[in-house]
Structure formats: structure tokens, C-alpha cells
Image (cartoon, rainbow, N blue to C red; front, side):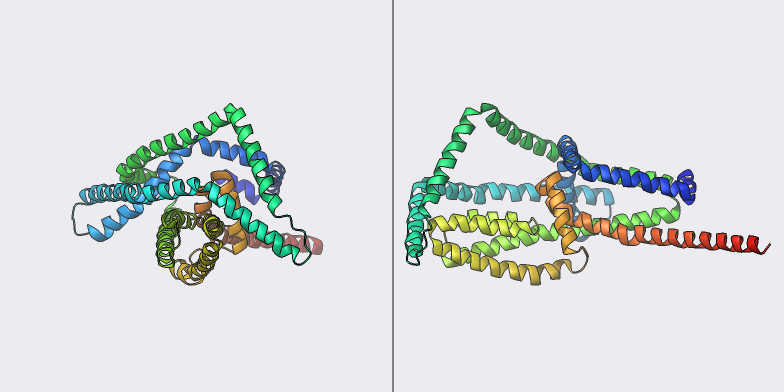
Length: 395
């Protein structure tokens, strides 16, 4: 480390490092698709570990709550932690059990109803398109909307034929689903082990940091990790709670308004609301599509309500929950969501904003001060050189 610092103090060392960084950045940008594909491949290999860490982190949010709030009067730290882990895992399993017992059957019933009424939906779509053609013809506009369905049917039949003929593609789909389930199962087992050995694991990491860093660096690093954990835990926990709340409010409204497929659409709205920016839009489109096939007026009511709900959520609820703790510009957030989703899928979309917020802390509090310090050192060195040149010229 000292050799690197010494080399960077030298002008040619700094220029060499800058040139190498520029070449690496240029090659990365010119071969961005290959780099993203490589990162995606690496992510697939380590996905069970990533899933395990994420599950352990999510459960640990509940563990910390029980350890610091509910069981704080228990004097034995080890027993308090083990009890918190056991209760947290039990509650998570209970929530999943209730979901599979109460919510999943209703979802399957809605899906079955949706599929069984496919022919009726086709008739409704064709009838509405025919009305649209007649309305456009009144203004001398040849819309030919009824041809849209025939083209759609032809394209669908073509896709089905290609899919049934290409058995390898079907097998790949089955294997992909199996790999997802297998990775999730392995991730759950790893999560339990992570939680069981959390104290020992963190203790080992802490000893390593103390051996590697000076006391001042150790304190700064610890503070940075604390702030990063606060950002991630706050963002993820509030996002999940907010998504559950949005799904429940949506279900209540649909029950009051007498709209069909309440459970299916409310689950879709709640799950998609976890994903920032694009999630609420996708949930609104999918829900409106399901209701459109039932009755176009249902879709209109749903879209209006979703716009009102998302406006309240975006301008009232989220600012109250998150405040200015993230401090990430909208454009940077959008870019991070796209890149995170491209590399890690839905998980990448979920953690992209808090990860970008952590990177913003590093940029503001580490990179910028370091660059300013380097600039001052360079200006002082240049001033000394000018003084030496002036003194030499006088002699």
C-alpha cells in the first residue's frame, strides 16, 4: 500500500494509473454487452450464495427488532440472539404458510377463471374493436381494428407451433424453473447457517479489519459500514412494508368497488410495487388488462384509482418514510435500475437504489476530498517548482 502511495505521488505514476484506467474504461464501454454477459454468468454461478445472503439479511431485520426491542430485558446475549432467530424464522414460515393457505388458492382460482373465460374475453375484445371500427368510420377513418385480433391470433399460433416443435427450448425452460427452485432451496439452507454463525462471522471480519487498517481508518470504515447497513435495511424493510400496504389498500378498494379478481390483481400490484419506477406502471398495466377483458369500465376505474394511489404513495408516503436519506438524483437512479436489472434481474432492481446511495456517499465523502487533496498537493508542488526556477533565474 505504501509503495502504491509513493508511486501515485510521482507525476508519471499518477499519469500511468490514469492512462490504464482510461484504457480499461474504454474497453469496458466498447465491449459493454460482453462485460454484462460475463457479470450475468458470474451472478448465475454465485446465485445460491447471493439468495442465501439476501434471505438472511431480510430475516435479520426481524431478528434485530426482536433482539433490541422485544427481548432486550434478557441478560444473556447469546440466548437473546438465538431466541430472536428462532422466533423470526418461525414468523417468516408462518407468514409463508398463511400465504399458501389463504392467498395462493384464491390466486389459482382467479387464474383458472381467467383461463376458462378466454373464449368470452375473445368475443368481448372483438366486439369492442368492431365498435371502435364503426366509431372511426363515422369520421371517415379506416381503422381496421378487427384485423388486429386476427394478426394476434396468427402470431400466437405461430409461437405455439414453434415452441412445440422446439423441444430443447421447452427443456431449457423446465431446467430454468428447476434451477431457480434449487437455488432458492440452497439459499434458504445457507441463510439459516448465516444467521446461526452471524456473530462469529462478523467477529472474524472485525478482527481482519483491525489487522489491516489503522485505528483511524478502522473507525471511518466502521462508520461507513454502519451507514450503508442503515440505508439498505431502511430501504428494503420500508419498501416491503409499503408494498404490502399498497396491496392491502388496493384489495380493499376493489372489494368496495365490486371489481373481480381481487386477490390476483392485489398480489400483482403489491409485488410489482416493490420494484422502483417501473414496478407500479407494470402492475397497473397488468391489472388493467385483466379487468379490461371482464369489463372496460372496470379497467377505467382501476386505472384512475391506481393513479391516485401511486400519487399519494409517491408524494406523501415515500417522502415520509425515506426522507432525503438516499440523496440519489432521479437520472442516476434510473440508470442504476437499468444496469442492476440487466445484471441481477429483479433483485438487482430492488437493491440498485440503496447501492447507488452508498456509492454516492463514497463519491461525496471519499473520492471528492481525495481529489481536492491531490489538487492542493499538485498546486503546492508546482508553486515550489516555480519558486526554484525563479531563484535559479536570479542566480
